[in-house]
Length: 136
Ligand code: SF4
Ligand code: SF4
Image 1 (spheres, rainbow, N blue to C red):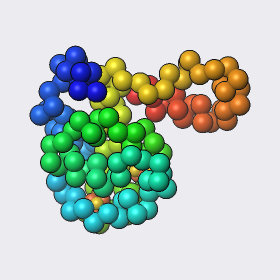
Image 2 (cartoon, helix red, strand yellow):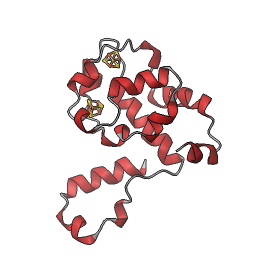
Image 3 (tube, protein in one colour):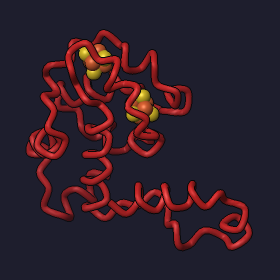
Image 4 (cartoon, rainbow, N blue to C red):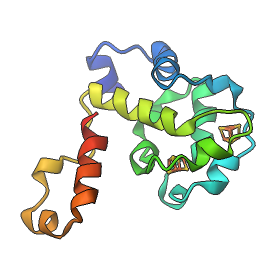
């Protein structure tokens, strides 16, 4: 992941600012209460929990954040955003991370390359949702 970011002339020190700009959120407002993670319906499948994503970014540890499956497993359901006592819209932060990664050339799923049998079984809405999430 680091190589992808560097290849596209993205400096790690600028990434945090970019995430804040894209999401419109102040990541340092988070005081790690964990309410976002406690309400997240997809937390069980994430390799880094939502509140830890914020903490790692506060600490400038972006490599694990950018390599995490968490932004991709996020369903943008807004539960975390509605629960945050500090007004941090974590769903927007996840969206910003996905956008940065897509711009850097990272695509966890090639929607157009799904096997035909699998594509035929997918609910149409799921396919459209995945296409939007993975194409920026
Ligand atoms: S709910 Fe808000 S303040 Fe609490 S850990 Fe999550 S982002 Fe941080
Ligand atoms: S928007 Fe994403 S991170 Fe937030 S609660 Fe929903 S699935 Fe979890």
